[in-house]
Image (cartoon, rainbow, N blue to C red; front, side, top):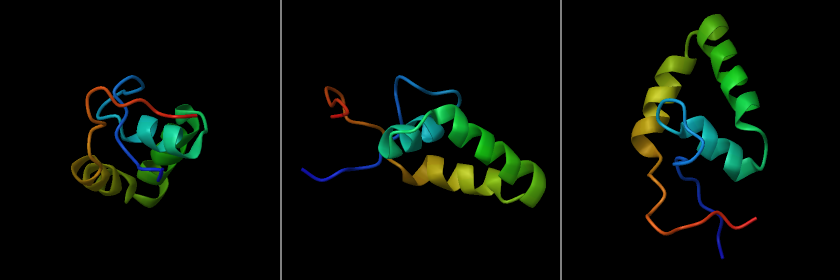
Length: 68
């Protein structure tokens, strides 16, 4: 079974991008959110990257569960 990246339905703040990335890499999504905030504030590309990720990463299909 291949591992796929999806937006999270259960761990979302805005679109579920950070929650999905956290589930994919098996790390706390809060860490992903902090990294994203730093990218937005310091570099300025974080917001654009988040919008692109929100458009590209698909929603997890109904009935699908993340296998640990």
